[in-house]
Image (cartoon, rainbow over the protein chains, first blue to last red):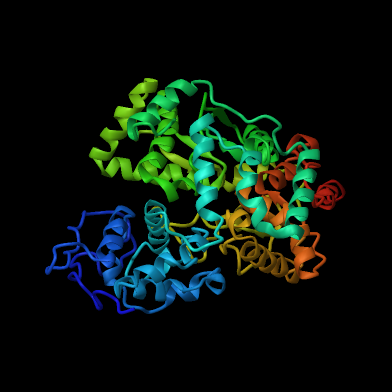
Amino acid sequence: MAPPVPGVEGQAPESRLLPGPQAGRPGVARPAVKGNRMTNRPTFSDEISNMLHAAHGNPITTCIQCGTCSATCPVANFMDQTPRRLIGMIRAGYKDEVLGCNTYWFCASCYHCTVRCPREIDIAGLMYALKRYSMWKNRFKEGLVGPVFSETFVKTILGSGRSYEPILAPSYMPSLGLRGFFQEAVTATGLMLKGRIPLLPPRIKRLEKFRKMVGKVIPGGAS
Amino acid sequence: MKTFALFPGCSLEKIGQSYYQSALETAKRLGIELRELDDWNCCGATAYFHVDELLAYTLSARNLALAEKEALDVVAPCAACYKNMYFTRAYLKEDPDLAEHINFALQEDDLSFSGKSAVRHLLEVYTQDVTREDLQSAVQRPLEGLRVVPYYGCQIVRPRKNGEEVEQPRFFEDLLSAIGATPVDYPYKTRCCGGSLMITSRPAALSLTRDLLQLAQAREAAVIATACPLCQVNLECYQTQVNQEYGTTFAIPVMYFTQIMGLAFGVPGKQLGIGSELVSAGPVASFAQVGS
């Protein structure tokens, strides 16, 4: 399948290219990268680049493909595509392949790539942006635990204001396989015996107000 | 006496309650009051940002607003809570529209955010607000010869917050040497433990944890000191699973830095939550006893 719009679009940003000790922190908001002029619709690369603005870094169009991120990433071995390749694929418009790979769901958000990127792209922020994008589109690689786990986690917090480990278990236990399931049960029992797992889910006191607050940010969010 | 608002975070309530206990014990001996925020909520952890950033900021903003009501700077012992609150405050201060939107929601709970309460990590407070002399004078049982790994993990040092050293930080080592222990030269000190991948991508997380334990063993460490409940759980509670997966025989205690400080300050192990771990911290506790 040929990628729709290959190459580098948008122009290089002027002011924030040069790395400085304080640079890379959010500063002047940059205008969005221009869309495909033919149809005026944003390309896949534009979409992700624009999401990355929200993640406070330089756009991926400034990437020089040096590979520092891939060499730094402690989980790169487990990824279908390394971070460097993933950025290249996004820029070349390989949308299906990007949405079908596990890379961003394997990011542990350790931010090592972010602090080392010579172009000051917030690569860990990019991985978050891709997680959100794929959740909006409801398109993931089969068998990933991350999306279900995230949703369960969010629902737990919105329901009680606090997180509670036992509620999260069903979202990932089946993924561990029989042996892993058993090992996890042993670990959990050990923690339970040491009094390190609460028997009842904690709740904040002003839960009603908390839920109204959440509802004001996203109507219906706390339902 | 310096007073801070304490944001314990969900982990410190149960799975990391020894961190909570030992934080309070050590603070007391350093003349710091940690006053727990009333009715705090979850910071959103890492999972929240996968779903919605605005909601994630709202969660942390509520806690920040609670601290502002007390007119106190807030201390988070959990590295992830610290990072979330630190950056929420920074982004809201830079973006008045975002702050206005979130303040509109906070009104529901009669709260508002202005950004006046700073966000600190406990390790930072113990190395910046407390002098080396203060630390030394609190020591009753110097941990002479105890080889401790200063494991920073990720979120305390990354992303970069204020132009600080992210590749070779030294403050954890300084803290450990101030209480008489020997900080181990540990090149993986800022390498990731796997974080929440322990849940979502088990094999990847176990391999990261294995690497960390292996290097600690090779460097003849007696204990790994952590400043994050997730690092503690991954390195300690999952050590048996690492052993089963890789045929290793690790039995390395993994303790919160506050527990190790507490031992040096002569606090009884029980008050530091020692005894609730799956890999016994007994050898470290008895070292502190015998070494005195």
